[in-house]
Image 1 (cartoon, rainbow, N blue to C red):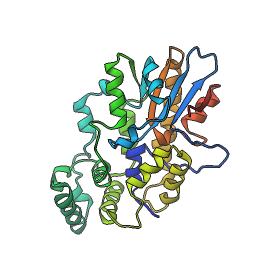
Image 2: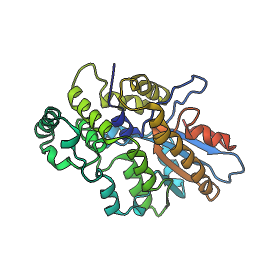
Image 3: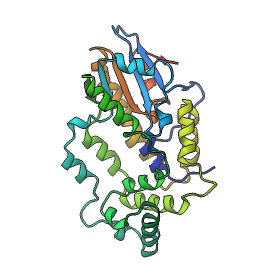
Length: 293
């Protein structure tokens, strides 16, 4: 099966494309962090940005780990985000629109898809970063049974329980990662997503979700890696911007909080596995990181 829409996969699992070397098995979504003179056990969880009920069917021990943690660490603390700045960051630079990036034929194709399948004109998204608009296409058929996606759900629950809320990245850092992909390339991926929507040979987001739910991060990342070659994005540049730099930041910044108490760290599942993943970065610092179940 082929799936060309690499940008979209990232949006759902903060994905990047890592070659799995087979020396380590990453077969769990939840990992315990101990050792290195830590007084309390902390946890690392790989999330999937979905409102599907299946994402909320946690394995034994996960909910207890979340409940007992004093600190909830996530990629971006939404309480620290300036909403106006965030909306501005979602827009392309002045003078760039989907009308200027796409040919008239491509624009009409995508516009008709949005009218027929989403019930909105593409005009409403004309100035938005295409990477965001593409997400609407790929996730259109995913179940939305929960009020919030998993990461936002946990953020709200942690806030309700009075946990300390920690962001491991800044909005500027996340925006810079997105902007590292030229908008022309983003627009090309948007067209591909529409052209390939519903084709039987495409691996669906539901298929990807099923792999994620199984906890088999090796298979999840291998599927993405195998299909990455058909994307128009430079994998080396994409990996560096979306994965490796961010992984280092997350591993470095969470360490301060691991010393303070029990942390439940929830980040996109693609950040966990691989030689440059958060699991190995924490192990290199001297921590024991082992599957919870």
